[in-house]
Length: 239
Image (tube, rainbow, N blue to C red; front, side):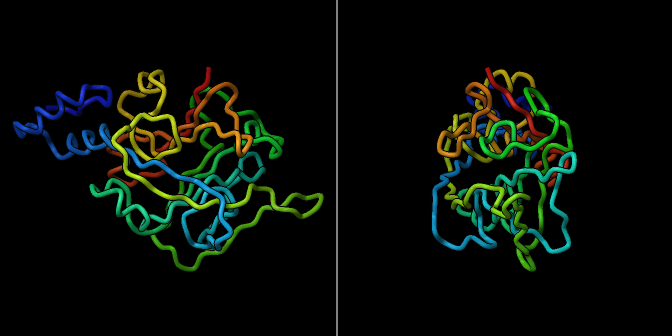
């Protein structure tokens, strides 16, 4: 049997497991069909250096440069300390060591953080307008603080803590890792992709993707298995 489309019914997949027709790659796709990891994001006064966090300033390996788009620093979205995923990722779909980072040009959608770059709108974004980066180690990190030129205040929202939860609703409308994109239109455009990270609108951050939109970092199961983070791409959908 060949690869199974993300959109195929899970009941059919269960029968294929029962009769041992699956290949290992098919099992990977099946797992991605039925699970996701939701992100519970909340304010904290704790020091989040070297830990999982949303917003704030990234803690990057000292040898790295801060990623930019058209000479403007990308917005840091989050860093995932992969050891935090072990309890909710029993199938080892994601690494359980090192740090995973997400950046994107969100100035058009994040009130108060505009940057003079070409707008990123619906569809697949230009490669330079986002980054998915991975460091195999959480050692020897340094916080990269981006400041506004006029008053040297932080050019980012305060860092928030992240809690991870395993769910069996892979296409929900929330911030999450893995599973399917929430919008069926995106699933149809990219039938053999999963959402490495999904970002929903959030009034608390004044984050608005035009009209009820969502930003997904999409990747194929094969690319995820091979840890080909540079193959992931950002896709925005809104009404």
